[in-house]
Length: 386
Image 1 (cartoon, rainbow, N blue to C red):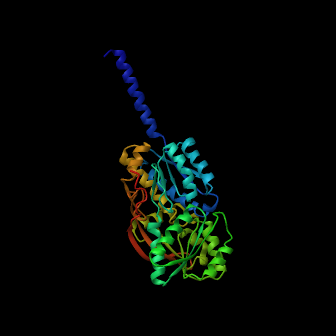
Image 2: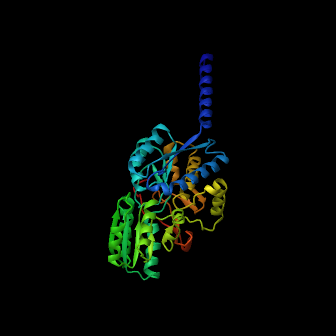
Image 3: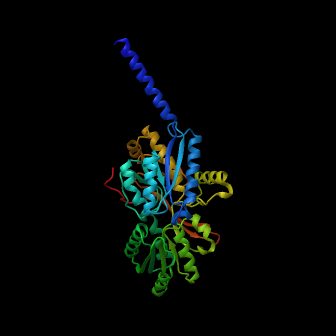
């Protein structure tokens, strides 16, 4: 080989090494789309705090593949139009390596085409109605197959309930959750005597409560959008003097605490509660308190999965040895993280087996854990995706 060729080869090698070094030094941007305004604004701040703690801890341990992680937080306005704009910003303007997002179902469904177009790994961290499948998405929140049974079975057995009234918000989550719930109740020998919906931005439950009162059910089960609708429905139920057993399929511990005695007595089923007695949860709660102090929002079912999703992404990138989107997506189904909920792996149809806790809201907003169901399978959510 001639000297000139060797010099050119040496120059190219040096340039390649310098480019690789520069890339390794560049921050790794991870997008968080969340409802800072709109219905989810009640619960979004806690999800942001969990994201911030996760990034701090990851960076303190050396980052991801030697790169510092930076958050890109964008408001999705708790809806479809806002989510399209938020994801477009994150994918095509901010050029994030991944998106980790707690959103309602309307926002998620609107965002998925953007994720597909941009080919960006997306970890969806919210509980939801199930069976949303995309080649770029993994889910670490619960689905109906995991969450409905503890509440309904408790009402059937411990409260001798035979008739149920269902209330929800009129969008994918409310409809999907209550469709599953109705079928489960009927499968177990119960009867649904009423099913009513209110738009996601509605706040006057008067007509729904009138129909509930007239139906005289043994128990009530609701599936509203997380946040504001939970609060308005609970307040109006209490104001109407209704005291029947009430299972809320969308309440989180943080919202319950802000509601005080309005939520007292309400039943819920959750994969995460602050009362989980394991070392990882105690460490998480202590770290959250240390970082945010008096500004801390109660960690809850909608914020803790956001925290652990960053570590699942980190594990996937390290297993792949790269932040290449396709390689990370493949690895996301092969890694696990032991955190505040215990060991979590998104290895069942891109969803997560979870231990579920049946809880009841106490007068001070805290949650009393009545029963724990270990490693509940999410069922066949996305069998056609590899």
